[in-house]
Length: 349
Picture 1 (tube, one colour):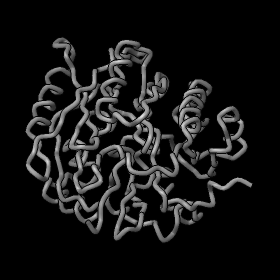
Picture 2 (cartoon, helix red, strand yellow):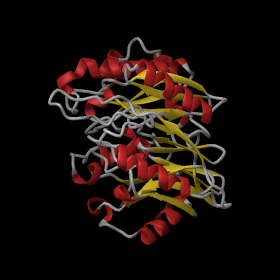
Picture 3 (cartoon, rainbow, N blue to C red):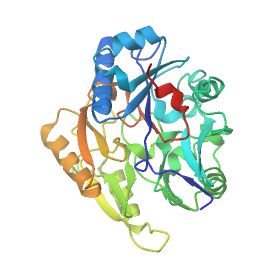
Picture 4 (cartoon, one colour):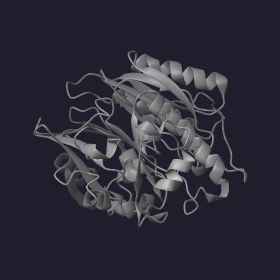
Protein backbone atom coordinates (compact mmCIF):
# COMPACT_ATOMS: atom_id res chain seq x y z
CA UNK A 1 0.00 0.00 0.00
CA UNK A 2 1.47 3.35 -1.05
CA UNK A 3 -0.10 5.37 1.77
CA UNK A 4 -1.74 4.28 5.02
CA UNK A 5 -2.66 5.64 8.42
CA UNK A 6 -0.54 3.87 11.03
CA UNK A 7 -2.41 1.72 13.54
CA UNK A 8 -2.04 2.90 17.13
CA UNK A 9 -0.54 -0.38 18.33
CA UNK A 10 2.22 -0.52 15.71
CA UNK A 11 4.86 1.85 17.05
CA UNK A 12 5.28 4.58 19.66
CA UNK A 13 8.50 6.54 19.98
CA UNK A 14 6.96 9.39 21.99
CA UNK A 15 3.68 10.18 23.78
CA UNK A 16 2.61 13.80 23.31
CA UNK A 17 0.81 15.62 26.14
CA UNK A 18 0.17 19.22 27.22
CA UNK A 19 0.23 20.27 30.87
CA UNK A 20 -2.67 21.86 32.73
CA UNK A 21 -1.77 25.46 33.54
CA UNK A 22 -3.46 28.65 34.71
CA UNK A 23 -4.38 29.68 31.15
CA UNK A 24 -6.22 26.40 30.48
CA UNK A 25 -9.73 25.31 31.47
CA UNK A 26 -8.12 23.40 34.36
CA UNK A 27 -7.33 26.56 36.30
CA UNK A 28 -10.23 26.10 38.74
CA UNK A 29 -8.80 22.73 39.92
CA UNK A 30 -5.23 23.20 38.79
CA UNK A 31 -3.39 21.20 41.45
CA UNK A 32 -5.85 18.31 41.12
CA UNK A 33 -5.39 18.40 37.35
CA UNK A 34 -1.60 18.42 37.68
CA UNK A 35 -1.82 15.38 39.95
CA UNK A 36 -3.89 13.68 37.24
CA UNK A 37 -1.14 14.33 34.71
CA UNK A 38 1.49 13.08 37.13
CA UNK A 39 -0.43 9.79 37.35
CA UNK A 40 -0.46 9.47 33.57
CA UNK A 41 3.17 10.44 33.00
CA UNK A 42 4.35 8.08 35.74
CA UNK A 43 2.41 5.24 34.11
CA UNK A 44 3.95 5.97 30.70
CA UNK A 45 7.54 6.46 31.85
CA UNK A 46 7.38 3.42 34.16
CA UNK A 47 6.49 1.35 31.08
CA UNK A 48 9.53 2.73 29.25
CA UNK A 49 7.83 5.34 27.06
CA UNK A 50 9.20 8.82 26.46
CA UNK A 51 6.80 11.73 26.99
CA UNK A 52 7.01 14.99 25.06
CA UNK A 53 5.17 17.53 27.17
CA UNK A 54 3.99 20.93 25.94
CA UNK A 55 4.29 23.46 28.76
CA UNK A 56 4.22 27.25 29.27
CA UNK A 57 7.87 27.01 30.42
CA UNK A 58 10.42 24.30 31.04
CA UNK A 59 10.64 25.43 34.67
CA UNK A 60 6.89 24.99 35.12
CA UNK A 61 7.02 21.55 33.55
CA UNK A 62 9.95 20.39 35.65
CA UNK A 63 8.31 21.63 38.83
CA UNK A 64 4.94 20.05 37.98
CA UNK A 65 6.36 16.65 37.00
CA UNK A 66 9.41 16.58 39.27
CA UNK A 67 8.61 13.12 40.66
CA UNK A 68 7.77 11.51 37.32
CA UNK A 69 11.05 10.14 36.01
CA UNK A 70 12.23 13.16 34.02
CA UNK A 71 14.89 11.14 32.19
CA UNK A 72 12.01 10.03 29.96
CA UNK A 73 10.34 13.44 29.67
CA UNK A 74 11.11 16.26 27.23
CA UNK A 75 9.50 19.67 27.74
CA UNK A 76 8.53 21.85 24.79
CA UNK A 77 7.59 25.51 25.23
CA UNK A 78 4.75 26.34 22.85
CA UNK A 79 1.56 28.44 23.09
CA UNK A 80 -1.57 26.30 23.51
CA UNK A 81 -5.20 26.73 24.54
CA UNK A 82 -5.79 23.46 26.32
CA UNK A 83 -4.50 19.95 26.92
CA UNK A 84 -6.31 17.67 24.42
CA UNK A 85 -3.37 16.75 22.19
CA UNK A 86 -5.24 13.85 20.59
CA UNK A 87 -7.23 16.32 18.55
CA UNK A 88 -4.59 18.84 17.51
CA UNK A 89 -1.42 16.71 17.49
CA UNK A 90 -0.03 15.32 14.22
CA UNK A 91 -1.80 12.32 12.68
CA UNK A 92 0.79 9.79 11.53
CA UNK A 93 0.79 8.01 8.20
CA UNK A 94 3.29 6.00 6.22
CA UNK A 95 3.88 6.75 2.55
CA UNK A 96 6.32 4.73 0.46
CA UNK A 97 7.98 3.51 3.64
CA UNK A 98 8.48 7.02 5.08
CA UNK A 99 6.64 8.37 8.13
CA UNK A 100 4.67 11.60 7.85
CA UNK A 101 3.03 13.81 10.47
CA UNK A 102 -0.12 15.34 8.99
CA UNK A 103 -1.19 18.75 10.27
CA UNK A 104 -4.96 19.01 9.88
CA UNK A 105 -7.06 22.02 10.82
CA UNK A 106 -8.43 22.15 14.37
CA UNK A 107 -11.31 24.50 15.18
CA UNK A 108 -12.27 23.62 18.74
CA UNK A 109 -14.59 20.70 17.94
CA UNK A 110 -16.77 22.63 15.53
CA UNK A 111 -16.22 26.16 16.86
CA UNK A 112 -17.25 25.32 20.43
CA UNK A 113 -14.06 26.46 22.18
CA UNK A 114 -11.05 28.69 21.58
CA UNK A 115 -8.49 26.90 19.43
CA UNK A 116 -6.30 29.57 17.83
CA UNK A 117 -3.12 28.40 19.58
CA UNK A 118 -3.87 24.66 19.51
CA UNK A 119 -4.41 24.95 15.78
CA UNK A 120 -0.84 26.22 15.36
CA UNK A 121 0.96 23.69 17.58
CA UNK A 122 2.00 21.43 14.69
CA UNK A 123 3.04 24.29 12.42
CA UNK A 124 5.12 25.86 15.18
CA UNK A 125 6.57 22.44 16.01
CA UNK A 126 7.72 22.12 12.41
CA UNK A 127 9.23 25.61 12.48
CA UNK A 128 11.08 24.66 15.67
CA UNK A 129 12.16 21.35 14.07
CA UNK A 130 10.33 19.35 16.75
CA UNK A 131 8.40 17.75 13.92
CA UNK A 132 10.99 16.90 11.30
CA UNK A 133 10.48 19.34 8.40
CA UNK A 134 10.74 16.52 5.88
CA UNK A 135 8.01 14.58 7.74
CA UNK A 136 5.60 17.49 8.15
CA UNK A 137 2.68 17.71 5.74
CA UNK A 138 0.29 20.66 5.66
CA UNK A 139 -3.32 19.42 5.48
CA UNK A 140 -4.77 22.44 7.25
CA UNK A 141 -7.43 23.12 4.63
CA UNK A 142 -9.37 20.15 6.08
CA UNK A 143 -10.55 19.96 9.70
CA UNK A 144 -9.89 16.57 11.29
CA UNK A 145 -9.35 15.57 14.93
CA UNK A 146 -7.33 12.52 15.93
CA UNK A 147 -10.08 11.27 18.23
CA UNK A 148 -12.54 11.15 15.36
CA UNK A 149 -10.85 8.35 13.39
CA UNK A 150 -9.63 4.81 14.10
CA UNK A 151 -7.29 2.91 11.78
CA UNK A 152 -6.25 -0.73 11.44
CA UNK A 153 -3.02 0.12 9.60
CA UNK A 154 -4.20 -1.64 6.44
CA UNK A 155 -6.53 0.92 4.88
CA UNK A 156 -9.62 0.63 7.08
CA UNK A 157 -10.90 3.72 8.91
CA UNK A 158 -13.70 3.64 11.50
CA UNK A 159 -15.46 6.95 12.20
CA UNK A 160 -18.81 8.55 12.98
CA UNK A 161 -21.08 10.46 10.63
CA UNK A 162 -22.17 12.87 13.36
CA UNK A 163 -18.63 14.18 13.81
CA UNK A 164 -17.14 14.15 10.33
CA UNK A 165 -20.31 15.42 8.67
CA UNK A 166 -20.65 18.28 11.15
CA UNK A 167 -21.50 21.51 9.33
CA UNK A 168 -19.15 23.45 11.61
CA UNK A 169 -16.10 21.44 10.63
CA UNK A 170 -16.02 21.02 6.86
CA UNK A 171 -19.35 22.40 5.77
CA UNK A 172 -21.36 19.20 6.15
CA UNK A 173 -19.78 17.21 3.33
CA UNK A 174 -21.39 14.00 2.09
CA UNK A 175 -19.97 10.60 2.94
CA UNK A 176 -18.94 10.21 -0.68
CA UNK A 177 -16.95 13.44 -0.57
CA UNK A 178 -15.41 12.49 2.77
CA UNK A 179 -14.51 9.01 1.52
CA UNK A 180 -12.53 10.62 -1.28
CA UNK A 181 -10.78 13.02 1.10
CA UNK A 182 -9.89 10.31 3.62
CA UNK A 183 -8.69 8.11 0.79
CA UNK A 184 -6.49 10.86 -0.60
CA UNK A 185 -5.11 12.15 2.71
CA UNK A 186 -4.88 8.95 4.78
CA UNK A 187 -4.80 6.21 2.15
CA UNK A 188 -8.12 4.82 3.41
CA UNK A 189 -9.85 2.46 1.01
CA UNK A 190 -12.39 0.91 3.42
CA UNK A 191 -14.33 3.38 5.57
CA UNK A 192 -16.84 2.26 8.18
CA UNK A 193 -19.38 4.93 9.15
CA UNK A 194 -21.12 4.62 12.51
CA UNK A 195 -24.42 6.49 12.40
CA UNK A 196 -25.40 5.88 16.03
CA UNK A 197 -23.78 6.36 19.40
CA UNK A 198 -23.41 9.40 21.64
CA UNK A 199 -22.43 10.00 25.26
CA UNK A 200 -24.13 12.60 27.43
CA UNK A 201 -21.74 15.49 28.09
CA UNK A 202 -19.63 14.80 25.01
CA UNK A 203 -18.42 18.01 23.33
CA UNK A 204 -16.89 16.26 20.32
CA UNK A 205 -20.02 15.28 18.37
CA UNK A 206 -19.41 11.57 18.99
CA UNK A 207 -15.71 11.02 18.56
CA UNK A 208 -15.11 7.39 17.67
CA UNK A 209 -12.60 7.01 20.52
CA UNK A 210 -15.43 7.41 23.03
CA UNK A 211 -17.54 4.69 21.42
CA UNK A 212 -15.69 2.02 19.43
CA UNK A 213 -12.06 1.11 18.80
CA UNK A 214 -10.34 -1.06 16.20
CA UNK A 215 -8.04 -3.81 17.45
CA UNK A 216 -5.86 -6.35 15.61
CA UNK A 217 -7.32 -9.45 13.96
CA UNK A 218 -10.50 -7.79 12.66
CA UNK A 219 -11.73 -6.91 16.13
CA UNK A 220 -13.77 -3.92 17.29
CA UNK A 221 -14.25 -3.05 20.95
CA UNK A 222 -17.36 -0.99 21.66
CA UNK A 223 -19.24 0.56 24.55
CA UNK A 224 -22.40 -1.30 25.50
CA UNK A 225 -25.26 -0.34 27.78
CA UNK A 226 -27.31 -3.05 29.49
CA UNK A 227 -29.47 -0.74 31.64
CA UNK A 228 -32.76 -0.18 29.85
CA UNK A 229 -33.45 2.83 32.06
CA UNK A 230 -30.23 4.56 30.99
CA UNK A 231 -30.66 7.36 28.46
CA UNK A 232 -27.89 5.79 26.35
CA UNK A 233 -29.55 2.40 26.02
CA UNK A 234 -31.46 2.81 22.75
CA UNK A 235 -28.76 4.68 20.83
CA UNK A 236 -25.97 2.32 21.88
CA UNK A 237 -28.19 -0.65 21.01
CA UNK A 238 -28.55 0.76 17.48
CA UNK A 239 -24.77 1.27 17.36
CA UNK A 240 -24.20 -2.33 18.35
CA UNK A 241 -26.62 -3.52 15.67
CA UNK A 242 -24.79 -1.50 13.02
CA UNK A 243 -21.45 -2.91 14.14
CA UNK A 244 -22.77 -6.43 13.58
CA UNK A 245 -23.40 -5.68 9.89
CA UNK A 246 -19.99 -4.13 9.24
CA UNK A 247 -17.71 -6.31 7.13
CA UNK A 248 -13.97 -6.47 6.61
CA UNK A 249 -12.54 -5.81 3.13
CA UNK A 250 -12.64 -9.60 2.68
CA UNK A 251 -16.36 -9.65 3.47
CA UNK A 252 -16.15 -11.18 6.96
CA UNK A 253 -17.92 -9.89 10.08
CA UNK A 254 -15.83 -8.24 12.75
CA UNK A 255 -15.14 -9.86 16.09
CA UNK A 256 -17.00 -7.67 18.57
CA UNK A 257 -15.93 -7.18 22.18
CA UNK A 258 -18.30 -5.24 24.44
CA UNK A 259 -16.95 -2.84 27.06
CA UNK A 260 -19.13 -1.99 30.06
CA UNK A 261 -20.62 1.45 30.57
CA UNK A 262 -19.23 3.15 33.69
CA UNK A 263 -21.80 4.02 36.31
CA UNK A 264 -23.02 7.56 35.75
CA UNK A 265 -20.65 10.33 36.87
CA UNK A 266 -22.00 13.87 37.30
CA UNK A 267 -20.41 17.30 37.67
CA UNK A 268 -21.17 19.68 40.53
CA UNK A 269 -24.16 21.07 38.64
CA UNK A 270 -25.69 17.64 38.11
CA UNK A 271 -24.75 17.26 34.44
CA UNK A 272 -23.67 13.80 33.33
CA UNK A 273 -20.05 13.46 32.22
CA UNK A 274 -18.99 11.31 29.22
CA UNK A 275 -17.07 8.61 31.08
CA UNK A 276 -16.08 5.74 28.81
CA UNK A 277 -13.68 2.81 28.91
CA UNK A 278 -13.14 3.06 25.14
CA UNK A 279 -10.84 6.04 25.65
CA UNK A 280 -7.67 4.01 26.21
CA UNK A 281 -4.21 4.50 24.66
CA UNK A 282 -2.64 1.60 22.78
CA UNK A 283 1.14 1.20 22.45
CA UNK A 284 3.10 -1.77 21.08
CA UNK A 285 3.40 -3.31 24.54
CA UNK A 286 0.81 -1.69 26.81
CA UNK A 287 -2.79 -0.55 26.99
CA UNK A 288 -3.21 2.46 29.26
CA UNK A 289 -6.82 2.24 30.38
CA UNK A 290 -8.92 4.92 32.09
CA UNK A 291 -10.50 3.88 35.38
CA UNK A 292 -13.12 5.76 37.40
CA UNK A 293 -12.91 4.40 40.98
CA UNK A 294 -15.62 1.86 40.17
CA UNK A 295 -13.89 -1.40 41.12
CA UNK A 296 -16.31 -3.84 39.48
CA UNK A 297 -16.73 -1.87 36.24
CA UNK A 298 -13.03 -0.98 36.08
CA UNK A 299 -11.98 -4.62 36.48
CA UNK A 300 -14.48 -5.87 33.89
CA UNK A 301 -13.31 -3.27 31.38
CA UNK A 302 -9.66 -4.24 31.88
CA UNK A 303 -10.57 -7.90 31.37
CA UNK A 304 -12.44 -7.19 28.14
CA UNK A 305 -9.53 -5.18 26.73
CA UNK A 306 -7.23 -8.12 27.50
CA UNK A 307 -9.49 -10.29 25.34
CA UNK A 308 -8.68 -8.12 22.32
CA UNK A 309 -5.02 -7.53 23.23
CA UNK A 310 -3.89 -10.75 24.92
CA UNK A 311 -0.18 -10.00 24.47
CA UNK A 312 -0.36 -6.48 25.92
CA UNK A 313 0.00 -5.43 29.52
CA UNK A 314 -3.13 -3.51 30.54
CA UNK A 315 -2.45 -0.69 32.99
CA UNK A 316 -5.31 1.11 34.70
CA UNK A 317 -4.91 4.87 35.24
CA UNK A 318 -7.32 6.75 37.48
CA UNK A 319 -8.97 9.38 35.25
CA UNK A 320 -11.61 10.73 37.61
CA UNK A 321 -10.16 14.23 37.22
CA UNK A 322 -9.77 14.14 33.43
CA UNK A 323 -13.45 13.35 33.00
CA UNK A 324 -14.37 16.59 34.80
CA UNK A 325 -13.36 18.42 31.61
CA UNK A 326 -15.30 15.95 29.43
CA UNK A 327 -12.30 13.95 28.20
CA UNK A 328 -10.25 10.95 29.23
CA UNK A 329 -6.87 9.31 28.72
CA UNK A 330 -6.87 8.86 24.94
CA UNK A 331 -8.08 12.44 24.45
CA UNK A 332 -5.12 13.74 26.46
CA UNK A 333 -2.42 11.85 24.54
CA UNK A 334 -1.10 11.33 21.02
CA UNK A 335 1.30 8.54 20.13
CA UNK A 336 4.13 9.58 17.82
CA UNK A 337 5.90 6.86 15.80
CA UNK A 338 9.58 6.96 14.88
CA UNK A 339 10.39 9.28 12.00
CA UNK A 340 7.94 12.09 12.81
CA UNK A 341 9.59 13.94 15.71
CA UNK A 342 13.22 15.00 15.71
CA UNK A 343 15.10 12.34 17.74
CA UNK A 344 17.32 15.07 19.21
CA UNK A 345 14.46 16.17 21.48
CA UNK A 346 14.69 12.85 23.35
CA UNK A 347 18.42 13.06 23.99
CA UNK A 348 19.69 13.94 27.46
CA UNK A 349 23.06 15.53 28.11
